[in-house]
Length: 330
Image (cartoon, rainbow, N blue to C red; front, side, top):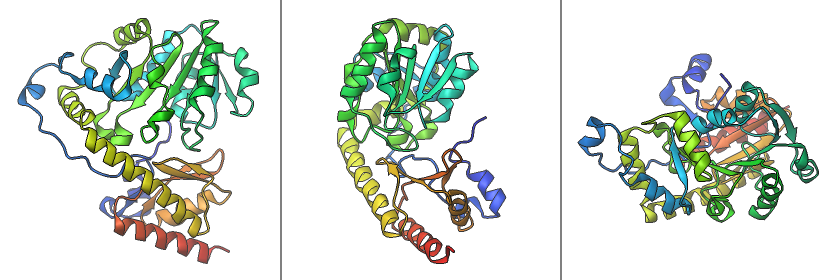
């Protein structure tokens, strides 16, 4: 299993700090709770129905008429490499490590590529994989640029696979509205923007034939009845969505400013996280962890990702710890 953020119990055991005393900034998931709608008893008692309105609510939200609900975008990440013969895959790096692991597991040839040189290399690949904005760097590529990449790949039966897990705060940058197109696959995560990662829900946007194949491979009832009921209500909550987007954008800017004011200017980031590429990243990660603040540590390159604090007390706690680090650093 690859390393991920959110492993709070492991951190609690390692540092001897009770789980309830931690400030977990390691995941990049919205920290604000969403008012949960009531779930009908039938959602618990019966097998999930596909005509319950979830897909229609998702089509309205994402602006496309072709999508498939999956048990978190992770389910699609692991399944999609099995739908192609072994091929050469270009991965815009650094990015979410599960993508490369899934394609490599199925015997595909993986090549890391850079955004600055990708145009020159596109014709080498059958599949190009992009996380947009990139996790953990926050790099955001324009729709126009990605659509140009897609056009070149699609001409020879290739795929452009775009993971938009962190794009909900900037929907104008999404390729969702350009789906379906042959060879264009877009993954959307429900849990991060809505702060409900535990619901395990995501969507694949692609051409119908590919979605049918993926659906057949995944099998029936991949999303539980209660999850479908909750997600449908939230996707239809337009005022709630607008408020969430505004709050996340504001707090993303606030976190960037806090880090900069503390003498730790971010290297990149998005509304949901900020990224610090630093040689002392392991030292900073350990310093914060000893004070009950969990961040996501990356080895290559040496860097930290910090998510958003959930409340005023947490913001003050983070600022105090970062100020102490700068003051005590040799």
